[in-house]
Length: 167
Image (cartoon, rainbow, N blue to C red; front, side):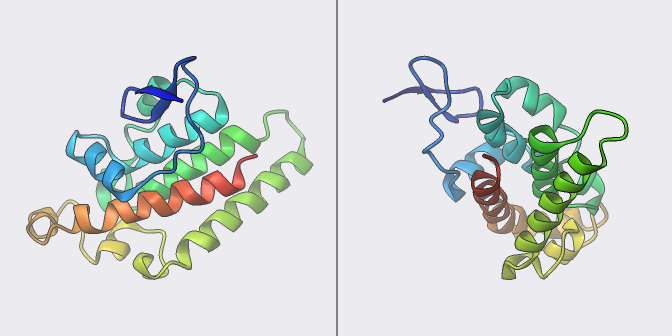
C-alpha cells in the first residue's frame, strides 16, 4: 500500500521503500520538470529505487547532466539511465574485463533501444532530438513548448527501459 511520496514524488510504501510497481508517467515527469527537476535527475532518481540508493543522493549526482549537460549534448535521460546501468552493473576492480564487457553490452542495448523510438529522431543527442541548439535557441524551444512536449516522453522511455534492464 502506498502511503506517501518521496522527495520528487516517487511513490513510497509505509516502510520507506519505493513502490517499484509504479511506473514513470508523462504526467509525473511533467510535474518534476515544472518543479525544476531535470531529465537526468528524473531518470536516475527513478532508478534509485531499483538500485537501493538514496533518492536525494541520486538527484544530487544527476543534477549537472540535464539538457544534454546544459549544452545540448548527450540527452539527460540517456545520461541518467547510463549512470543507473553503471551503478547496477559497472566494473570497479582493475582488470575485470568480463564485468566491463557485460556493462558495455547493457549500455549498447539501452542506447539502441532508446534510439529506436521515433521521438528521438534516431539520436542520443539532445539538440538533435529537439531540433534546436542549446542554449542558443532556448527561447524558441520554450516558445514551442518542446521541453514539455518531448522531454517527459523521453523520461518515460528511459525509465521503462531501466525497469526492464535492471534486475
